[in-house]
Image (cartoon, rainbow, N blue to C red; front, top):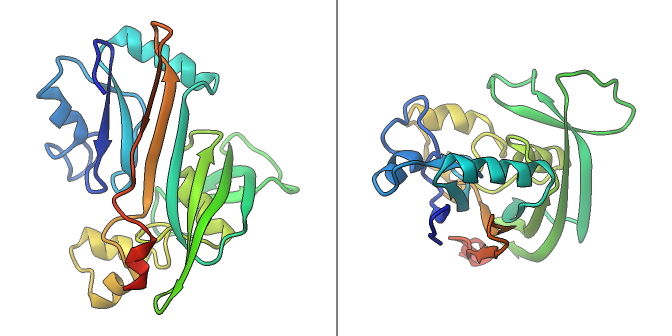
Length: 234
């Protein structure tokens, strides 16, 4: 989608949104600067999360979208493939905190809102999950989920699913073994790692993006994921 205020693009699962660390030129922001004079990425996705990303082309549109996000008027829906047989549906309401049990500084831990002593470092988060389909194969049991984040916290979906016991397939940080994150960074993933990951990138995809633009026109796009459960039958 492309108009004078907004652009909506499909990002691959191997592309950071913004420059950082060892990713400087190979980023969505840098690619978009070749087309647009001004770029504000409004709905950032993690590097390995694929799907729809909203881009604002001027500061006024960016401020407008920020107001939409603040009142929950920008709708996003994700698809996720996870390990295990997920329940028919689940509402997860809790908090995200730093995962002090992990060697990875940026990793976050989801905790249910049950008898917790609150402090300012804890971020509330809420996500609705609904199972779409289920497959059992020689590789294990896997569920395809429809995911509706009620809040927009960093790593919210991935951290919550890990805490619930259903890590996302292919996730190197919040998956079956966080050691994959270190080995991937060093280019040292071995055959055993690749077999456990199953997919080269995490199976999390932003498939629906919907909001009302400044003109009053509703803008809604849908994007199919680059994977499906048939990959687990092989």
